[in-house]
Length: 525
Image 1 (spheres, rainbow, N blue to C red):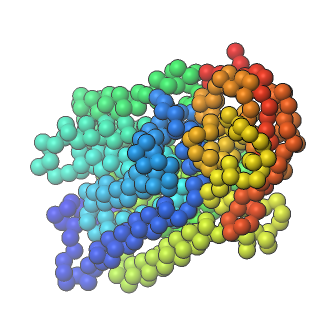
Image 2 (cartoon, rainbow, N blue to C red):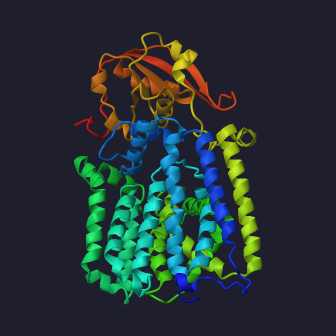
Image 3 (cartoon, rainbow, N blue to C red):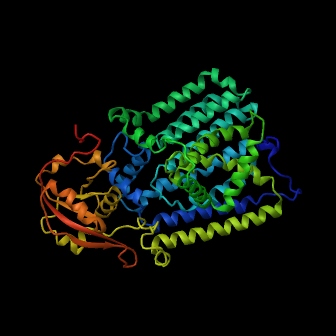
């Protein structure tokens, strides 16, 4: 195992033949930032993005799906600039700025050369490069906050003795960063637990358990996260329960279905990182796990990676479906380990690996942007009819209020819009703009259970939107709430003039009584 190197000893000599191509790596990082900026402007809102755009119109202490930081950012930016694609800018900035603490953390732990390769691998990872779940998601601020907390903690634990005068400020920085992470996503809890586990197992650093400053930092983090905690206290811990239920293990099983799902998760992670990045990450983790130094930087990072990684890897065998993006924050602290591992490779090996990785990244970015904008019809036409197009919610719907189907609803325009699916409610809400209140009436309303007070709409008409394939069931379920529902009209959405999705639009006449949601302030008592 290579010894720990600080900033002063990390520079390679000019004649050792191993000078890291720093300028090329920074150029690659800049190119990735530009690619994401282009994607931000040319790709439509994804399903989750459109939903978040609509529900964040109502400013709240917190929200059903996640803590409130990304909704607050979105609400404020929309107030300044409107609801165009530019509202993604704060989230684009967050993922670009994450390079700073990623570099600082890696440089402090393993030296400058390792930090360069850490940045290269991080930006080449498929998920970081193309953001398949969209920009307006809590992962952006989560990653920036977690990396900032890790960097500040590394400065406390591994900086030369001359930095001791900054320790109190650094502990406060850890608290602020962890607070930002907790205000982004509940999975941020793994970071402070990882810090605590490292202190318990590291004799040299165990003294921090008896120092007052870590606990002051913890109080700062708790104060920042308090809006989400207060909201949960006011709403029967709904958000915490919802997220916890998605990761609550059931009975351990090694049947074919569970094993197949486990293999699917592994394959998805390889794809979302790219094989060229996954291999160094996995090998670096194995290399670090073999290191016996309980006080060293490898063990510090392992405490941040291993516990959540083990949980998410085991969940498919425990009867739970794992969403691929859950791993994003888990891999964060493995990248410095990969940077250290890569820095130990020969110049020829790194040149070959770097060229393959960069070429793969360029091809991935081009294919991704094209697929999002023109669809995958050339592939889907060769698949079974029931195959799902992963890009189907990745384009903006047109303004439905200008369609013939909307004109057929008659005048005056309906007072509100109803959908039976929260994703479709988000898509049509984003298309119509904030002038039309949008609501989801169904078993899974998400945040719409808090933003929709149907009591205020008694006696008013609604525009009902249901996917055509499920129109009969959807309209039948909503019929008891209206005096009558007029004959539905079809409308289609898609890219390039293609009817990729077909919906029906019907006028619900005179809402007769309020809808009682399964949870929230307007639930059935």
